[in-house]
Structures are given as structure tokens and as C-alpha cells.
Length: 400
Ligand SMILES: *Cc1c(COP(=O)(O)O)cnc(C)c1O
Image 1 (cartoon, rainbow, N blue to C red):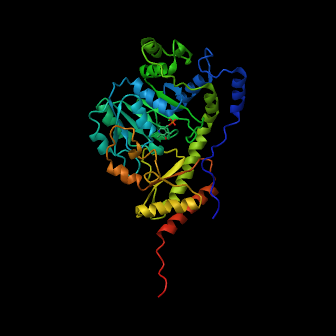
Image 2: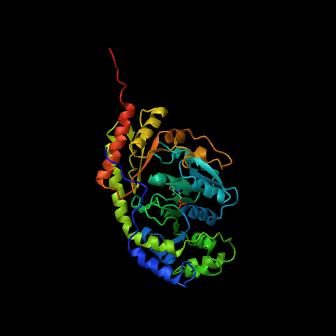
Image 3: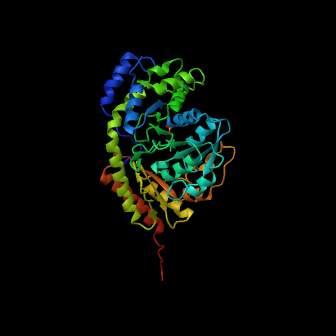
């Protein structure tokens, strides 16, 4: 069988970034607030807000920082309960803990999306909700928004893996009160590290900007400031702590030339994913859940459930694929997995979530960077099918 591609290498950064990087190195102007206007970070914020169709954007050091600032900007009191999915990255409950709030975990179903009956049952005493569209699988935002709006509960979208995904034609990240994105290397746009939040709420963004580290009147360097935003800045000046989670100009110049690549990356990622999904779904032992009907996905990895295998066979399958060169992460079986809720031992209390646990014990994760060719996709898929064949082949009867 062919050698599979390296799925951890990133796509190279567009050459257009080089001139901007050189200019920054020449001037030494790396801090977003040195120039009075037009710093690369401020330009990125305007371009990103326009791209997604939201009024405001604030670029920060990571998506985790964006989530933390969103919670702080909502003004939640200490020990407020924040509902999050039981299947997400450990950074999400961590951002809640960081904001002095208490994460409440709800069940996630076999299709990696929030279990709406558990969600509704746990909604009554929560003060905010974070929806993690985990691995870019969109939960039912129509149902979630109507449940939350009826109770006046703000929704933060963790869209770290959903840049380019749409729901009923609207960009994911623009449906809740705030949307948070990541520029960490394994996401659709790669700056090594970085994050951004978007919102239409002037008061919320003013608070987030100040807390991100716009000390004194540095908020004046955020480009054009409409009247309601200027009023909000005046209102909050000197009244909020400064957490200094700013983005550097160097990150912004790496990100900006990647924005025009997004459409292509999303298209290729979806085509690649759907091709592999179709091949895997032809086997009775693989199940790649369908997207929801309102959703157009932007995947750069694939998740599938293993059907009819016990835990030992699932481990054997992952080992057989690894021996052939494809790394399959079973969320609930790989050691110390940061997406398995029982490993979030920094929480005061870890609830039992039987549905989520059952899903994690058979759900597999394989990276499919959008740059892969059809041939490379076939090599990966052939290996997955061969590994399954090895595990499920009936034992041969020898002798008589
Ligand atoms: C990557 C990721 C994060 C964290 O992003 P950082 O920028 O690394 O802080 C949060 N949530 C999800 C769903 C992610 O995939």
C-alpha cells in the first residue's frame, strides 16, 4: 500500500505576507497600538468583520482568549453557570473557569451535536451558553437560539473549527451574540496562534476591547468608530481590568493574505471530506453522520463512528491503521485526550454523560488538510478500509 501523506504539515503562507513581514521587521512596529491608525491588527479586524458580515471584530491572542473575553464582556457574576457541550476541547471549560464561572456540561449525541433535550433540561439556571461547533459539526442553531432567546440567555459561538461554515446561509459565528474563531495552525487560517471575536453588540465589544488591553484611549486606534461604540468606550473607560490578550501585528500580517484563500480552502475541504465520507459509508463498519439540512460545512478533518466493533476491536482497528501510517484518534480511547470530558479533572465536579461517553468511545478523528490530492485521499481511505478488513475478517478455520 502507498505511503500516506503527512497530515500535520500546514499549507505554506501566501507569498504576499513576505513584503508586509519585511516592512514590519524594518520598522520594528510590532505592537498594534504604536501607529495612530491603520495597524495591521486593526485592518485585519475590519476585513474579518466584513468577510463574516458582522459589525465589529476584536483580534486577540487565541480563540480561548476570545471565549474568556466574551464571558467577561457579558458581565457575568462570579459563579454564574455557563452551559457548554460535553464534547469540546478542554480550552472551552477552561475559559469558563478562567472567567470565574462554573461550566455545566450537556450531552452530545452520536452525530457530535448537542443533545437538545438535555440542553433544554439544563438551561434553567444558566446565565450564558457556549456552543462549540466541535470539529465543525453545527448543532441545531434554530432550536438553540429559540430556547435561549425565550429565556434571555446570551449565546457565545465557539466557531474555532467553523470558519466558512454556514447555517441557513448565515455565517457560523454571527448567529449568537458573539462568535469566536481560532488562527491556531490546525484551523482553516494559520497564524501559529491567534483568535478573533465578532459581534454586532457595541457595548459588548467596547468592554472586550478595553479588557483585551486597550489601556488609556487606545481604543481610538480601532479604525472608524461609530457613535454608539464611541459612547460605549467612554462609558467603560477606566472601569474594567486589563487582561492584555492583544494580537501582535506580526500575526495579523500572516493572517490577512490568507483571508482571500478561505473560499477555496472551504470548497476543497468540503469536497475532500465528502469524497472520503462516501467511500467510508459504503462499509457497514463506518458511519460518517450526515450534515444537518441547514448546514454547509467547512471541514478540514473527518469524524466517523465505528459500527459493530467492541472496545478491543476498536483499539485493534486504530493500531492497524497506525501500522499502515494513518493516525486515527478515538476520542475516548487515546490517552489523556483533551476532548474527553473525564480528563477535565480541573473541574470541581465532572458529571456523568452516558450518551457523550458512548459516542466518544467509538468516534474516530482523522485529519484531512484541505491541500490533499484525490490520490492522497484514496491512500488514506484505502488504509482505513484495509485496517477494518484486518479487524473484522472472520477467523479462518484451519485443519479439518
Ligand atoms: C482549537 C479550538 C479551540 C481553541 O483555540 P485556540 O486558538 O488554540 O485557543 C477552542 N475550541 C475549539 C472547538 C477548537 O477546535
